[in-house]
Length: 93
Image (tube, rainbow, N blue to C red; front, side, top):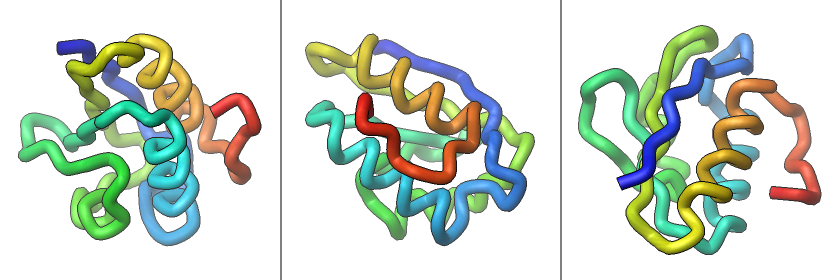
């Protein structure tokens, strides 16, 4: 299992627009990824309802995880997206 712990860089947290950007990025990796807040239950990172249900606020830590081939690179890209609080989906994700 590959994991990345990352602090949410969006001031408003993983809500509405940032969640949409994150979900699209997670889907685009082609790798099954889960996300959880703290020691909570992991949810599918490609699920808008799952991600919104985390209630992750800006400055809180989330954990990205995957067991699939290509997980290292996929999680690195997603971690950068979350940590930097990017407003648009980068072409490299």
